[in-house]
Length: 434
Length: 143
Image 1 (spheres, chains in turn purple, brown):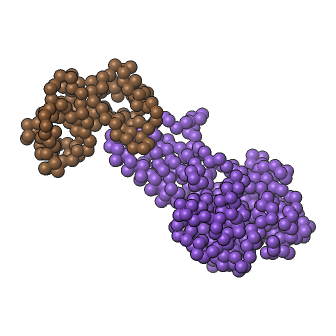
Image 2: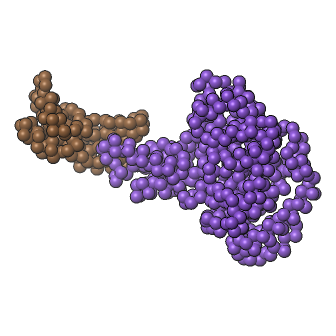
Image 3: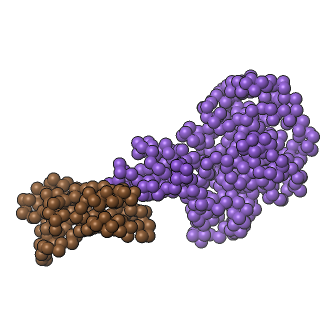
């Protein structure tokens, strides 16, 4: 398989680290001068940009957290004036405020390169037709993949999410060869295809690039069997750049190659924040080396995984991260959308004017994530009018969709039926077997 | 002239209804009439009992959500067309029945129906105009 950027992707360790250090020093100097948050934090920690003399010095720099980004909402983490920002994306946040990220022209170009690399790693060439079923919008998936496909020179079908039946028809008629999307939606697509009497295995896909939500080896097997393609895992988050931070290769499908010339990856113990040895699980931490508009230094992703430094047979020299296995916080990823219990709580507060006891129950039904919000009924909500109670469920469900962008079934339950441990309610029951 | 109905929120779970009736049994409360309206997830059990306060206290004590609703207990003559004698004048004046259920009446030859109307006051007037007997709450408890 061809490697898109052979010089950088197969660069020997020594050269790679020299580039990393130079880029890190430049980034630190720049953000120290342009982002008050970093200047204050580093001053407080007694660090000067000139103190970063080796890659090991990175460990002296404080971490950046999601809370830091929220505290600087919307634009205070930007390291360039708005005149240089050409694109804004956002991810959802617990307080209802999203995390806002910006891109300069060069950032968009860097990102397109990274996605072109990723698609190439997944087996795509400029002769391929890419069916992009990631959502277009503030979510980075759709546009990220789109620009990457164009950079690669492939033909991209910007189909986005939804309109499932139409997607199947497009797949039959346009004959795309590479499929992009969230794995749960893709499995849903396969089922709808089945109902339509279309056998996915007769379509023309050679590989699928799946990400934006956690998925397992079991799901890979299912995807590969049902769809007759190679299922490739891709990783990324808007805070770091979007999809294309790391990707599996077509040859091995064993760990995701982190594009280390653009990002330094660390895995730390989430409690002590000390680095853990390679192979051991901890929290993923990223430092961006080339981002202009929105650089992040030691950003704690809250994703749990481990690193594998063993060189890959595909020829890429960059370190691999294993498939993320979970989250350090209570964030749920439902059909690719980040959902925090506190967001549901604010919706309930808004619609009911009180804070009822509630619980989020997540299941995977027919390969699609389903969210049920159980709400304990109380005297103020109750009436003997069934229609009224059902209308209340519908209203809450509608408001959740409106605020969070996810469909949730709302079920009223009897008082005191939601388990409370040590006086605190258990907010999340995740029945997905991941 | 109104009767008081208590209503209880019940999740659709096996044995839940039996738990409610057991609580009433243990509190020595007698059920006169009941109806269960349900959706896929939950139901609302509506009850006419001989002692509302005792029933409410016992159920709340066991953690149930209990509400009270004013309903009308209407005597319906036990003959063909008996129910239409009640419903026709109401529908003529656009009073809608929200729900209704039958009453177990050991003493009276006529049937008793419990009605919940969308316009309670208007329903009462119409029933009075048509000399249809409405049984009051106290009388219900004493039956």
